[in-house]
Length: 316
Image 1 (cartoon, rainbow, N blue to C red):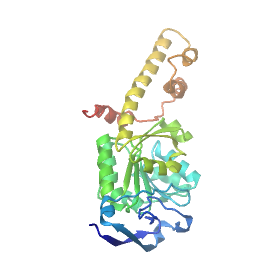
Image 2: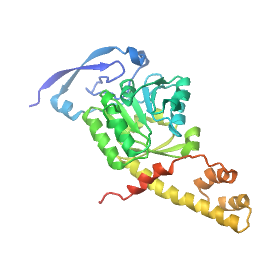
Image 3: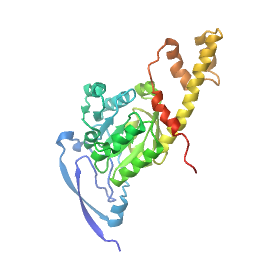
Image 4: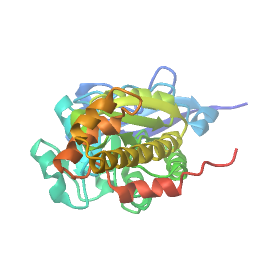
């Protein structure tokens, strides 16, 4: 028979919390524990659990993120990330930020974010760490590298990768996070720089449903969440999204070019088709910008390209 054992856990004052079911919370639960990152105190928590429950790491109670309580880490402050993290600061969340070119994080620092020197340092001072970087190789280094997020994240922490990346890498990260007593969610987004600025992104999530629900208050300022299944499901959805949006955008530009060569007023042409079957998000978001000659990037083609290379789904 299994023997009950008493386990002493030394956790940060914003980390694991015992519950009546001998479970641990992934997110902090009260404002009284809101201690500045550099002056955190350690406390000892006594948990009584069966050996089986410890080995399986059953954690039934996961508390929702709360402004002023949940410490956010943010890695990647480029075209999308800067606006997304800015929404969290405006909502009342604190943030520790890192970017390879730290000058790009200055706007967030001016709003109260704390700068870190490495992804590991971000994780050491955070409960939930968001990443939105360039390529799958950058995701691997940022999260799994020697100075990466997982090296610094304490048990009970959550990784949220919002990069357009590889489903298999998302599953690998989730498995390694589980081994450390953490959770990982893949949550790529669609909507471009305009959606990021306006908090109107489509967020495609893969991972534990309870964890995604707990992250709701963090996702809400950024956009609308759809939970699609287990680890990697969000990235698979984003690949399908990229296939769809790429063909739509090419069609929009080709149609505008044909209308111009046919001698039509292109603006009038766009009004004529927008209410019919040719209407699309691409038309709504980009046609006016194209007409004005505004070619500022909303999403990099070189970032989208890896999605096409990994677009063949696994064999059933």
